[in-house]
Length: 139
Image (cartoon, helix red, strand yellow):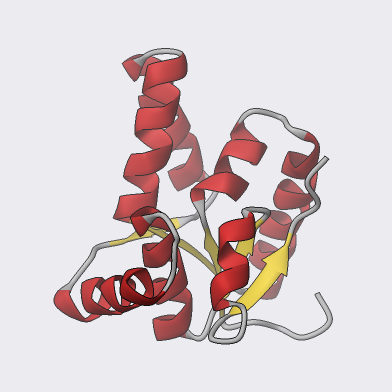
């Protein structure tokens, strides 16, 4: 990271890459460690955490999903509750772009907090001019 962002906002793509030991997951782990060392806030919305939970619960089990969420909390990732201001910004992104609603919440959080979204999800290209994105390699 050349400049220090105010926060790193993790979307479900980045979190799942990390939790499932995908190639980009190692980069996510390094960025989390770097953020911790530099005092950069790590966060994700509860909507995105819920998305991670249901994907893991479907693929594995509720117990595995609960363990994954606990692991994220242990990493120091702050789960941000959704208020009207954040929901409205997410809805505004959704009204203008063909993105999943959960991705719109990650983008909205990045915009609201001056953060940078950590992702490899190409849907975020649609909002690249409005928020900062740290692109992870898809392998």
